[in-house]
View (cartoon, rainbow, N blue to C red):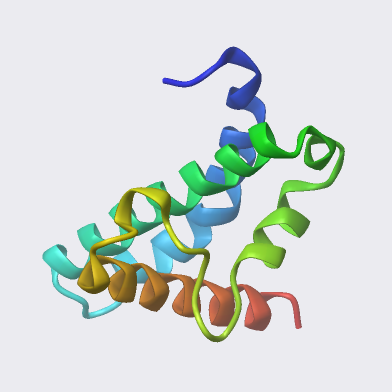
Length: 108
């Protein structure tokens, strides 16, 4: 666990991720693939929390906006813990692209 002040944004991220995860579970993806997406979402959440520590002014922005600024149709941020792991970063980017498409469709 991080710091106490990280709990509210972390909980808000879970709210953002939950519909996406529910759709993954309802799909025909294997358990292993779904678990990989869950792990990648965990890493994405960690990167966003890290951003909040690096730039405290982000704490005044809605978490949905911060999330939208970190993912796009090309992937997500370079994950600190995966800097030298190209395969893991590729998997992470795949999850971020999928989440971006899901959130874009949900907002229409």
